[in-house]
Length: 149
Image 1 (spheres, rainbow, N blue to C red):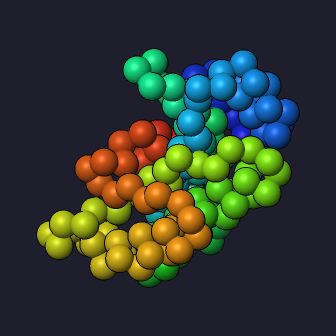
Image 2: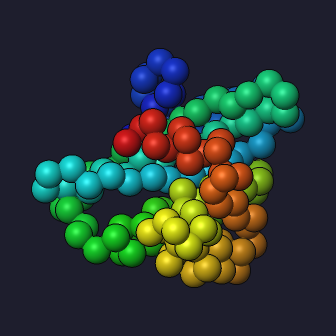
């Protein structure tokens, strides 16, 4: 995937950029999130890495993926979780710090349609050793991912 800086839209080499950023900002935490939208004949996924510094805000890197439209809501939302976990694992395998959170753009409130995916999604994220956050606590990455989509 091609990663860009949200503020400037400039393309970056993810590994090089993260290494330099984290070297210069050792107090930054990695938070990962993903959102998706169906548009015409495609599903667009926005995958984000938020480099968050306490009380200073976040620096956002993002990538987009376009695939043929996924009509089943559960499958579309589940892929958001899979992409987030895969990215967190990939970063950790490359020696980057473990993601502080994986923000899931899912709502545990039964009134919302994404509710039926929440338990399975949180279970997967936590079984992989990460902390999951759902709405309304997943603002950091889920808001940025929504903006990207």
